[in-house]
Structures are given as C-alpha cells and as structure tokens.
Length: 389
Image (cartoon, rainbow, N blue to C red; front, side, top):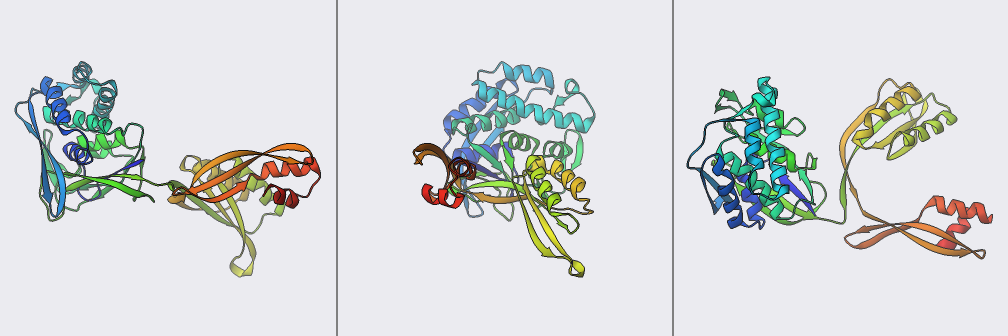
C-alpha cells in the first residue's frame, strides 16, 4: 500500500492531518484521549471531532481548543517533558523527531543554538496535541511500514502575526522546515502551511513527488481546516495500491559525432559501472548532415552527478541535457529459477517475470544464463533460447 499526502489545494496543519487520518478510519475516541492527556504538561486542551462539509467536500474537522497554556519553555526542557509522557515508543520518538525539525528550523531563522530556542506557538499545548495526535493516528492506521508520498504544499500568501511580529507567508520557519519539499504560493492571501503541519509532513513522508504517481486509489480521507475560503479548505490523504509501481528517474542526453566505435563501447560500459540504470545509443543526423549518435542515460538521482561527470570526461561534450524527476511506471517483478536438462547436463536458468494487476505480462530468461549454456555446450545461442522456451 502507498499513502499519498496531498496538500496542494489548501496546505497542511496538524489538525488537518488528524482529521484526514480519522476520516480514513483511525480511532477518534482514542486519539482524543491521547491528545488531551499528553498536552496536560503544557496546558489543557479539549478535542472534538465533527463531520462537516467544506465547499461540497465531506470531511472530518479536528477542533483542538486550548483551555490554558503554560509559559514558553526552552527546547531541552521541552523534549525532556515529551520523553516522560506515557506513550508507545514509536509514537514518542517520531514526535520528538518532529519537534526537532521545528527547533532546527527556528534555530536557523534566529541564528541560535537548539539550547537557546524557546518554543512559542509550537510549544503551546494545542500544537503538542496536534503533533502527538497526528503521529498516534498514523500508527493507529498501521502506516508505519507503508510508503508515504508527499505532494507539493500550498503555503498561501500575505502576512501572518506571530510571537516574533508580523512575518511574510510562508513564515521563515516553515520555509526552513520545507527546504527539501515543493512549495506552491497561494491560492489565497492567508497562511496555509503551519510549522507544525510542515514538520509532521516532512517526518512522515518517504518521498516527495511533483504529482500523483501511477496508482489505484482504494480509500480517500479529507481533513478540514479551520478557515473558510472560496475553495474547499481540506487536506486529502489517499490510500492506494497497484501492481504497477512508480519510479522517479533522471534522463540524461547528449549528442556525439567525434567518438570512435571503440570509444563509444568503452563509454557504454563506463556509464553502467557508474550506476546508470540503462544506456542507449541511437544513430542520428546532426547539423551540416554530419552522422552522429544520441546518448541517452537513465539514472537515479543519487547517481546523476557522477554520470554527468563521466560523460563530460569521456566525450568532451560541451553540453548535456538533463530531464530530472521523470516518473516511469514499473511492473511488479519476480525472479524465478528453473532447471533444464540440456545434453544430459542440468542447468539453472533465472527467469524475470513481470506482473500488472496480477496478470503475467512477460517471462524472459536472463541472458547471462543462456550465454553460459551456449558456451558450455557449443550450441548456438538462438538454439539454446528455443530449447529453454
């Protein structure tokens, strides 16, 4: 199962996440109990859940009402209080990780060490309830072992009043927390992404995608925001599954017209050794009718730089085209070994089997195994392939 958190329409906040999780089936009564109990060290809160309609979208609203709030507390003391809470270890540690993200964001903005950071809005009892409630709901739905994908976050615009004065939206701490995410300005002049919501999002998400990958939605939950706009102020979370998976790759290209066949062959192997997922070389006609070759490399992001360096070094190219973060659909794959008797000798052959929605779409023997049999028996490779089929 893949879980997709979609804050593209109205941003993200802790109570919106909780509402969406409850909409998906998390235990509302238990979440309420955990939130109210855990926040007592920081001030009393009252939690209620309501089914409401936001511009035509039926959603769950988690209302966290702050009854009292203790004075601001510094980060080390704050974390010590969290550690003393009677919570499951996974819930406690994930919550601590989230508060650490917030503290690091604050420290970067204010140029202070973590020990010097005092939580204001984030250390408030309602924010504590939001974080712990979101994390508890996440584990209550057994999402801990599932892949979590985050989509771009609408952050809003305009100005917001904080403990540090009037600040632009998104607030500086939100920008720091979301450095590795994709932010979208608007669609309204209001704060849509809170530091709490942003930190929870960054901690829970395994991957950040530009758009929904190829998938099949099984269940959708909507968490309502407090404000009302001309559009549905809801956070959407999708439970999805599919035999076809999505993979994010980079496509790297350059034209070549000055390498020999031997140099191209060397480059081909060098790129595979550098981590390329696939390499193809296609004959083309270049300007002034010169014959040349189009080099195309498929790579994972982590190998992009070394592959680009290899191309520059080995080809002397003056320009390389990069199409980053391209999504490709991947069929479910399985490798099965089968034994064949050929010329009174047994050989083991590995088959790569591809599935889409439970149906086999391909079943091919691995070339290396066929080559080994051909060399060992003296049979033509074509003949070995026919015998295996």
